Amino acid sequence: MKKYFIYLIFFFLITAINANSQRIYVSGDPTFPSAAFDLTEAGNNFENSVTSSSGTYITITHQNGWYRLFGNFNWRVTIHKSDIIWNPSLELEARRSGNGSSGSLFNNWISGGTNFQTVTNIPSNFFEGGAVRNDVPVEYRINNISVLIPADDFETTIYYTVYEN
Amino acid sequence: MERKKIYAYLIIILLWVIPGYINGQSEEESCSLAFSLPEIALIDIEPAGISNISLTLTTNPESGLPVTASGAVNDDLWINYTSSLATGSNNRSVTVQISSGAIPSGVAVTLQPSAFSGSGSGITGTPVGPVSLSSTSQTLISGIGRCFTGNGMNNGHRLNYSLEITNYNSLRFNESSTIQIAFTLTDN
Image (cartoon, rainbow over all chains, first blue to last red; front, side, top):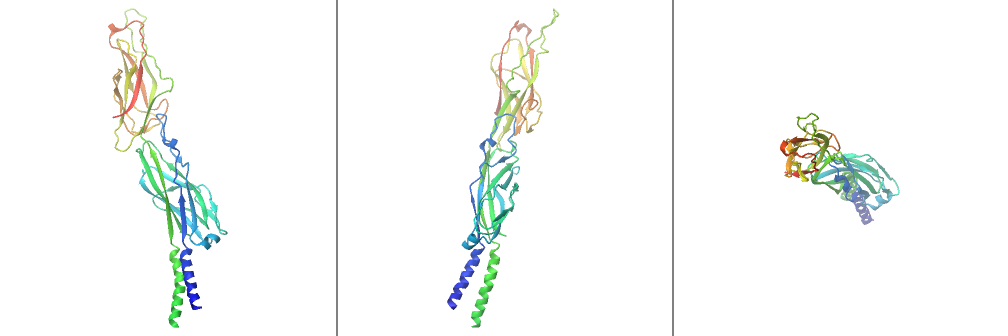
């Protein structure tokens, strides 16, 4: 009896450790229409803004199978970027362009992030929800594109972080 | 027995405390965003499609007075350009030359671009001065950095053409010629 009690204690201990381990998966790198960066008429500037032609998909899930099944966990996602080659005049924005699909029996909800918001190098809240959420689409927009910015190959890494709410 | 109770209490406390610490746990994933702004050098003459002009000497109705070139001017055309440069690249210039045809003997065609005006922005070029057109490439506008002039008439530099009589003896009655003028936006 005493042995089973100890096993039970360890089971709950491991469960407790795992219980709060949300997982986030990001698939796809955003791409932009190549025509947006190609000028054909002398005298013109680039279009000021360009929206991604393909974005990324975010999945939030849980390490624990019971939590995945019943959805008894809430989360929030933050977004920030880390520049590799970037120009301070360029502004990056992101928005959640859909809800994705729910993946648990209960507590399926998602909120926020549907308007474009500026992505900076400091994390900011993006959207939040409950339970497993699959393939939330994210769209990107770059503003202030101009021939006045030195020509270059720009690159930045966008980080998504999930926290328990 | 007392020791077992202590262990049991300790485990129960841990069960309460550990999730509390793990609540702050987070996980991070990333994606990469990349795009290129290319170097661009575009130039054209506006209004598009009707960039032909005609310069004609004026005969004087009064005998004894000279043929004059005072009316042989034209400022209908504008030059537009867009210039995008990488960091460290040199500024650009607009050069001009006669690419085909020859100017009739006894006259010269002079071209003076106006200073930049219009809806564009950036480091637009500076007119070098009046240029007497020839088949040799000459700088017309210099110091063009990253800029765009705006598209269409009234944007960029107005092109002021004029005809000058350089040698009266060489003028030929009823002589005319068509010349083609090439503008090039070039790296310095």
